Image (cartoon, rainbow, N blue to C red):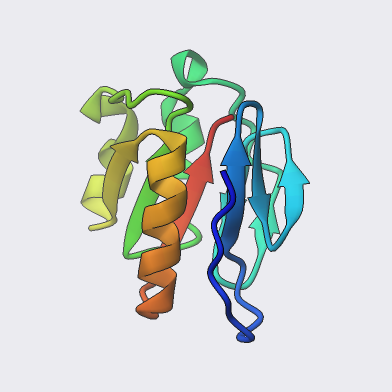
Length: 122
């Protein structure tokens, strides 16, 4: 599916998603990524939802977002709160949703100038 949001702000936005990929500013990614308004990171060591550990969530502490959107792949899944306890302590909101929903929600929040991070699993 192609998402057609027009912007000249230079922000990183999801522009599409499909089986096995997401696109940010028309660049296709086939591995888990972390997207913020100013950058896309490919260094998040997550591989799939079942393998997530607390260290995968602690990665986001240094980024200090208001909210973390975790795209869990083709279907919505929820991690045990013990895994993201440090995010809760740091008052960082976390939302679990399927990856297409995380892409759409991220674009809306970035357009509202919210400090949001989307971490998406493919």
